[in-house]
Structures are given as C-alpha cells and as structure tokens.
Image (cartoon, rainbow, N blue to C red; front, side):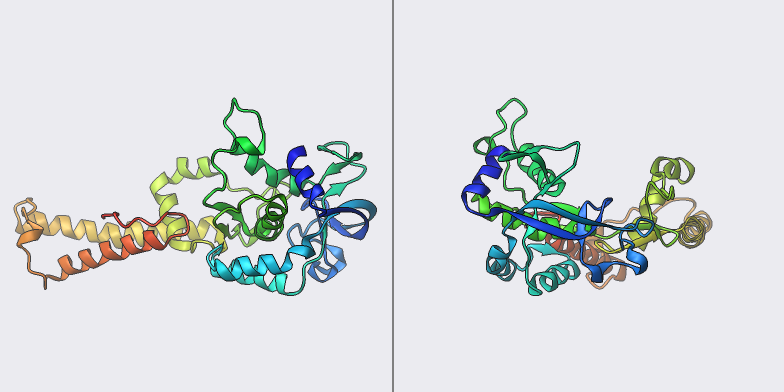
Length: 314
C-alpha cells in the first residue's frame, strides 16, 4: 500500500482538498444528486438514505487521465465487457472526469494515510490494491517488484462496482506506472422476486438449500436457461418449479418416455448400434449435431472468460 501510494504521490497526482456531497455509507461512495431516488435514497440501497458529508480529504487527479482512459477504451474495445457495460463507462467518462477522494476522516478502522495518519485510505483504493497483493507469492515480501502474476487477464465483477474497476483502477495504475489488466467483465444482478437481495432485507437465496431440495442439475438448468450471461436476472421459486416441470418433466420427460416405449415395442428393447461415419452428410440428426458442435466451439472462443482456443475440439 505505502509503495503504491508513494508512487502516485511522487507523480503529483494526490493533493489535499475539500469535499462535500451526498454519501452512501453502504456503498462507501459519494453520489451525484441526479443519481439519487426521491427523498435522497440510494438507488443501490433503496432502504438507506444518503447523508451529507463535508470534510477535508486527499484527492486523486482522475481528471488528468481523461484522454488516456479514452484512448484505452478506443484502442482496446473489448477492455470492458459486455457491450452494455462498456457503453455505460463511455457515457460516464464522456461527461468529464472529476478528481475523487482517496481518504476519509473520523474512521476508526482502515489503513492510515502514509503522509497523514489522521486520515485513512478510502476503502475503494485499499480494496483495489489487494489485486496486487494477491499477485505476490505467499512467502515473498509484499512489494510491487515481487508480483508474479500481474497483470491479470480478467477482472470479473458486479456491475455496481464497474466504475471503480474500469475508470478509477486503470487511472491509478497509470499513475503508478504499472500495467493494466487485460479485460473487465461486469455481470448483472441476481434479484429475488423482483427485489435486490440484501442482508438488511433478509431476502437471500440459500443455494445449498435449493440444491438439497431440487438437485444441482435442476438449479444449473434454470440459471443457464433463464439468465443471459452478463445481464440481470430474477429468481422466483414458483417460476423456477414451473419451468422445471414444463421443460424437464413434461417436455424432456415425455420425449424420454415415448422413446423408451417405441424402443420396447419396435426394437426388442435394444438400441441400434449406429456408426456416425456410416451416415450420409444429409442425415438431419448428423448435420444438426455437427453444426451444433461447431457453434459451441466458436462460442467458447468468443467468450470473454475463456482464452482463444484454436485447438478446442468438441
């Protein structure tokens, strides 16, 4: 932490300043007034009102890196994925970047600021630097020179912290003279019954309980079918059960039952020994299967979570 902070400090990118505005304690972030819900509620924590803060802090010169970040997004169009999240970041940056506070006062926990122990490092600077700490071997001294896996190929994050990872973090790394991660992928929210899950609301999905009652295959099937990768999705147990019954029990179950009856009636309970190589290229099942295998391989190669795999064979 101190080594990284010193690099940014020596680069002239941290200065003392005054900050006032609406602050969400749960997000640990200042909010623009236009982002807030009526009566000053946080859009991400709709049961918590923001509070007014007026304090002296230390700031990072984020505005200095406006053009460098724009060039990053332009030269590496897949740096932020999916496309909808990339567009969000481009829109935010296009409005003009403002310097942000990297310290807090009157906080009884946290890492003291190296040049001013009366303040602590802002949690969203502290948290981001853990990526560098994680890139050091367990027994090695935690220094930047001892990072062995940095930069990472991919950050997989929630969409609510995209701004920290796709704007603040790259700018901090630029200031410290360190390479950037290759890609940031922001997934959506999983809500329950149309509401965001939270500890304060107590509306949590217990995955182990769900698997115990319905089985892991049923749970996997629902989430793969119902929630598009990278987008928001909602879990409702009634809909979950109805989909399982309709798709698995009724459709696939009925197909299996009819197939077994026909095998019993017409094939003396035996499955023919068919060699795919003996089937003509016009065979509908063979052609469909081969095309599907090709589509799956191409999808894997395009995936932001998988390195290109030219040798992939289905």
